[in-house]
Length: 354
Image 1 (cartoon, rainbow, N blue to C red):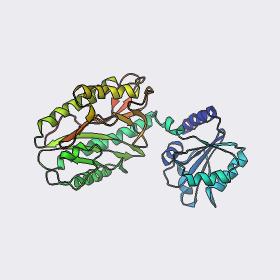
Image 2 (image 1 turned 180 degrees about the vertical axis):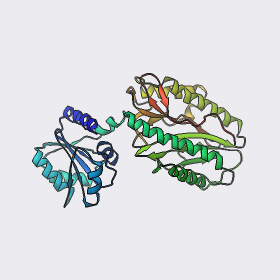
Image 3 (image 1 turned 120 degrees about the vertical axis):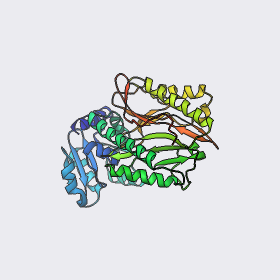
Image 4 (image 1 turned 45 degrees about the vertical axis):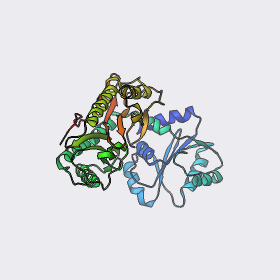
């Protein structure tokens, strides 16, 4: 936590910000280790304060290290004003992506200082995972892998997509997950052509291709995996696009390493799918960063010209979607290394026909 605070202060100095107000739940946990739902951090170039209420003061004292913990009696703005006066703050950075206009209006009226929109400071720091974070995400991936194995054993024709999703979600919780990374996607038959076909009441039928996109939260970090498989023999065109997507996904694995841009990784999959004649059927980016949130930097997209760095964890998830027929997506989570990458998700990727 000390190193993370030092890194934040370097960014503050660069942007000439005297103090930084942290209100994003994910950023707050990253910086302070606090897992409660009511609190904020006030960081100056020299000192750090954590403000919460009576309900969480004991929890804050247990979890938050190296910060002065303050229990506010009235509203938090009063405490912030007091700290700004005592610390001589003239420029306060705040997370404009997380502060509502109503909250900003109250701050603007109450605080006699410059309010500097400064979202993205901590998010940028979060992109590079340390060994401890990587180990936690790897465990979240292992739980997801076990979840996929469980689905292959229990799924059968006649079950609804939502029944499959509920059993998967409960199974991952039984292995130590605190929740799911997002609403589990179970898209079968023609619904597999929906990239984000959240589980529905549709019954799974013999001959369906099924896209399963899911993940779990473990100790505050997420996993994200997609596998596509079939119950009964699918149509030949679906088999063909499965092989194309699998090879495109492997193209990304072959070139992913530090120094390669997000756009270059995206092109590795997109160019292959386009050459195979299905470019228009691949309408989303090839991947994104994961960590404390399911979508964070860096993006693996056509618009990202920034090079990846050691410690980034990204998804690799190309797909092809054919309306009225079905679709295929295959996704792994990769840790970026100085040379190459390490795959954290290990479920089989050959086409499984149950």
